[in-house]
Length: 83
Image 1 (tube, rainbow, N blue to C red):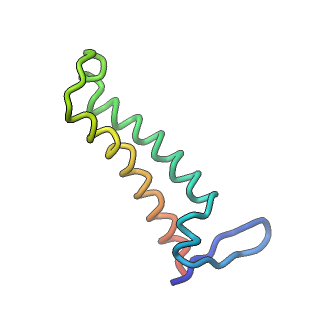
Image 2 (spheres, one colour):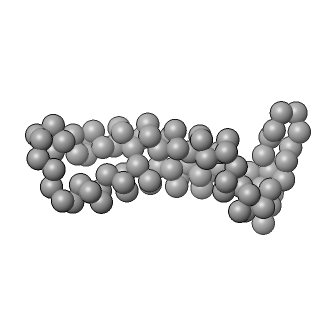
């Protein structure tokens, strides 16, 4: 499987492993994860966070809330770059 990315004025073809560690895509996916994850956290867990009590469930819910948009953004980028 090959993926095409735009670098400067040329297109670069990368394998799946190389595409997953392509820093421009990783940076963009992590930024999307931070923004969307923060919004989702405040919408879904804001009252709990502001109350000051942290139930044990938050320790697995928060990482998932941030990881999901990263996975979705990465999946979207790879789907668009697929050759």
